[in-house]
Amino acid sequence: MGLEDTPARLRGKSTWLISKAAARAQRLISEAMAEVDGRAYHFAILAAVDEFGPDSQVRIGQRCGIDQSDMHTMLRELAEHGYVARTPDPGDRRRNLITLTPSGRRRLQKLDSALTAVQDDLLATLSATERDQLAALLARVFD
Image 1 (cartoon, one colour):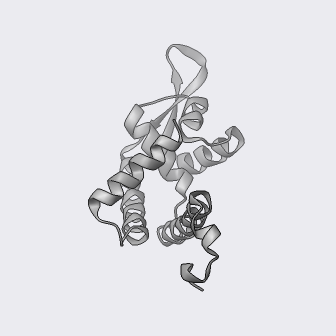
Image 2 (cartoon, rainbow, N blue to C red):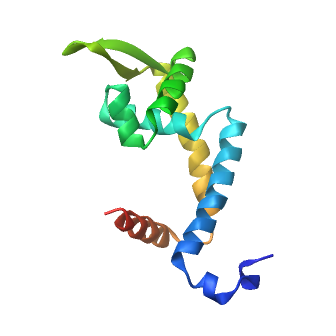
């Protein structure tokens, strides 16, 4: 069944459309990550450390919207593969800083390529300008 088979009252609700688009995006992301033996959380963590630099597990989790119990698991997985390293924080020896390794930087590029392909698939019917507009409008929802 296509969108045309959906009641007009639903098709006219942005919240319903966002929900359906998000569900499709999650499915495509899961499939793409499975193909490269990855997880979307791994991408988020690696991207945060790459962009903002070494930081605490708590702060990275806050930046990415990841629960601390999940962060512990994800960081353990990333560290086991050599994508991140935990080093003592020179300013506070009670906590560790999470840093990106050269292997982690390569992994980030691979995951980024996979997610870019998902974006291109999901948004194929939109022009570059429309994609930018969509991103800007969705970002405003979070303000």
